[in-house]
Length: 220
Image (cartoon, rainbow, N blue to C red; front, side, top):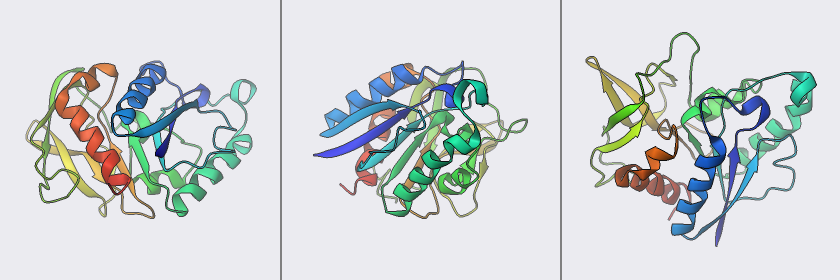
């Protein structure tokens, strides 16, 4: 059985807009449907110390980098070194929603992810009924997948690497904004901007997208 480690935002990677604990619990339930055993851990400096997962799922955001509260950047350096090591060894990563705005103290995270939320530039319309369009139906991850709809946010104007392989976009005011892509590497990494809260995962098409991402990342 494959094993996934779900990193739920805590402390400096926990924000007031996303319930990382609730979302991570739902993700663990969905992973089990595909025979993937999941461990949910908060983002503590030691969260990766003994981790040997087959898949890392990041459900963390932008929190409070207060040395008196959650340690210094130096205290967190081993965590980021360990994550970079897992990626370099070929452990796949699925980064969800606010993960584009997490690990700001790790400059390499943006290149691993293939994109970033940019403060003052990236934004989203109000949460509500949203649709997301497949733009490369020939890719095995989305082959046969129709339009994805969910109660969710549409992230717009993310800074996306020109080498990222974009799979889904959000259309807004005549523009198409990448929201799901395969990162350019190294490693097998998918970023998926959907999943503001558990309501997103009440949508069958959104769940199907998530399960396809997991299967593709695990080469199933």
